[in-house]
Image (tube, rainbow over all chains, first blue to last red; front, side):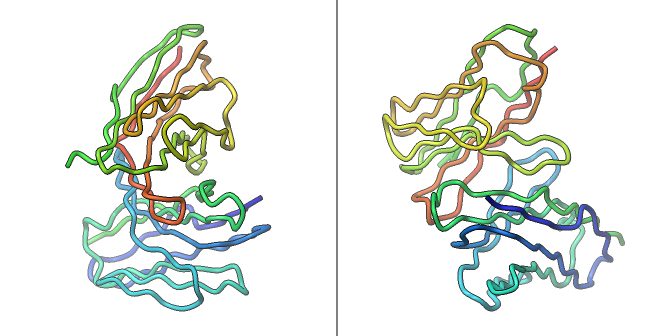
Length: 111
Length: 112
């Protein structure tokens, strides 16, 4: 099975940089997703990592270390609209469709 | 394109009543999923489908049934609703299991 840990809540200041961590234990790993979910809305895809290293997409970057079972999402130049929950999700190596989601990290951006 | 749509958006049921949630996607995706999201818990997979006419159980399938008679539609049924099924239900679709999922806006269901 999968076990995913991420902080429940974080607060950061507008314009700053914030790093949201995710650790996982899994019997088989194929890839890791990050989704953003604003309150009362649907999750939307942010990034996907399958190999070790950093993937950069504009203000958002995601890092993966398969050997350590660790990922982080880095948000730069924070904006008020970045206030949302950020969901870490792991895809197993067997049964690709059974993605397991973490509980999400609720990020509050303050002025 | 509308993407993934869900109906209804809100529903209140009494214990023992039945209902069907409809999910539709216009992206020609093969894979479709039903999740529930509860406070303090991650999205949990109820059932999924890898193509028209196929369905399979996810992590929490008990009390739910699904059907995928048409590629674009995925229905979730509750035969006899229970208060434990009070939740927000999300439908999602993907091109394949290797790609990201696109989520519908959700259905907020309350069972009293």
